[in-house]
Amino acid sequence: MTEPWKPTDPGVLRLPSGRLVRGRGLRHPLPEGPTPTYAVYLLGRQPPEVPWAADWLRWPDFRLPSDRARAEEMLRDVWARTATERVELACGGGRGRTGTALACLAVLDGVRPEEAVAYVREHYDRHAVETPWQRRYVRRFAEPRAQGLSGRSSAQGGGVGG
Image (cartoon, rainbow, N blue to C red; front, side):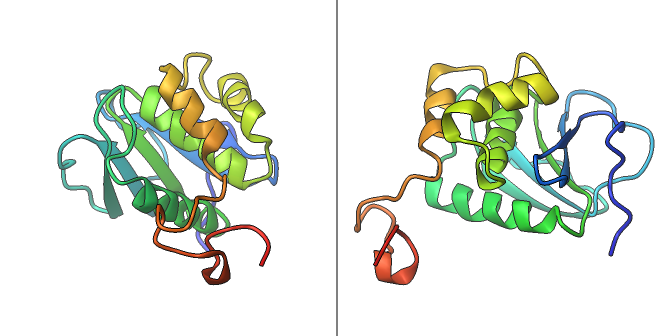
């Protein structure tokens, strides 16, 4: 297991379960201290190369992810990785897209969707999640989708019940 983030490290959000994840803005210098072991960059264009494992989720500034199914898959993977890795989520400024993704992680961690934005604003950045559609995305993040929209049926794990 990798040494985890410290809760006092810059940009680190402690989820209710105790898992730690770092959010940051790529326009700001890399914080001192440990580097991520894995990162997801939420940008409208390809991110710069980094010396750690990283993925890119196409997500234009002030908007929503271009591929919502891939976004959900990646955020579920990020949440799982936070149990054993130093994971970073980052966009240009570190507030809108990063805050939205952190709020989705909070939902995965057990925070009620309608409370997740407030949770991230209280524990990460008071300006996180910048637009009404980002707030709506968080509220609807873990809702089951109708078959055909997600490509998975309830029997395949895409919905509730069965």
